[in-house]
Amino acid sequence: METDRSMSRLTAVSANWTLPPEGHVNHELVTNFASRSLHDLAVVGKAISTGYYDREPAYSYFNGCPAGGRQGYMEAQQYANDFDGILANCPAISWPEFIPAQVWPQVVMQITGVFPTQNDSWHFTLSPLLSAMAWMD
Image 1 (tube, rainbow, N blue to C red):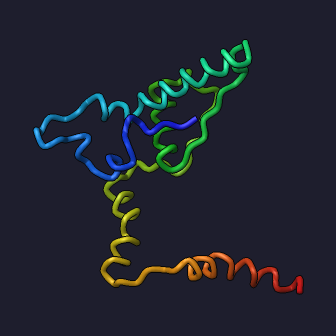
Image 2: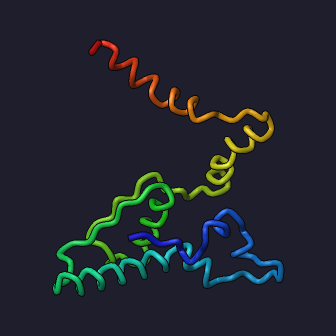
């Protein structure tokens, strides 16, 4: 199962959802984003599984990376009984560095006016693989 943490894709890249122009922090959405939505998802997911299989799940696990890694840390801290195991890798917890790093490639492409074509991306992805397999020819 998946959650949008009560946000649409458009609001996920803007801070307006947390601090609207009126200047009042939307605490409900911040809490949903930080932890509650994943807890609710765990509860609903288990209820759906129980209804479908006529028995409670034997085990429940969470796996997430990088935003899911942060969510996994929050789950373990605030809702430890939601999952039997949590694998939380490379958590995106340093947001001042994380968010700019996500948009930096777009910034560079806009400034330079150079954008990879589909063929460039395909060649970049396959070149190392094809080189490594050359011995098979």
